Length: 275
Figure 1: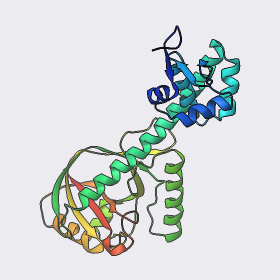
Figure 2: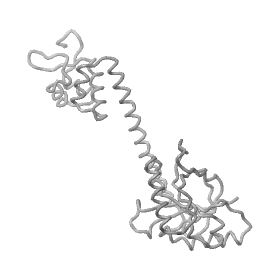
Figure 3: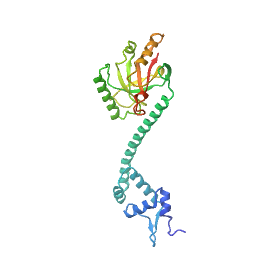
Figure 4: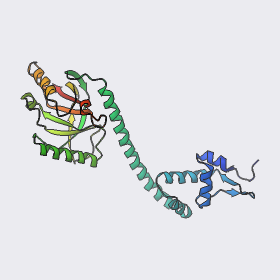
């Protein structure tokens, strides 16, 4: 039977209703943050249904990192305008955190996809694959096999991708000019690239679209930079068959240092479009 004229809940009932525990409610009461609606003559606390909304706001602000002292100050002096300002500010923080979590989720999904892909491949032989359209953030042009220039370009490319949040879990790759590969030059890169799922709204990068289509493909197991034998397979096949290919070869990591400690276990995908 209810002790009071308006519906109330015991501490245990209110704690269960709000997904918390009695200890938290007692602590909040002791520090003056959230007091019960009523206390009977025996000292038992009782909470009203309307207090559920206030408690949910306290919980939300606490989860957003707002100190209990600041929450108390807000509750002690709150009005509708102050609440609006606070909620609009917190909404921006929530959106920022959601975007961060989406990037993490995308990175995880990408890595899962790469690991599954690596389990299905056959090494050191040419195959034909149908590939979707893909977007790539490009580095500055390289067109050189100079070690210092390559390292400098990689550093600035990776730094740029990290700064703009363009790291979605793909290892960086490299583009080689087809004309050079067919002449036996396997060391001179045209660009480095990082794959992304959607083109960003930014003018601060070089964006390359790898066209959807049919690609001549091979997978290399071992050191990414030791691809001469595989590229020689491509060169021989293209020169001895009546086919036309795209302007660039794409070398992209599938399994890298994130998944394996030994370079002998790395997996690299090399492809060129069939026209």
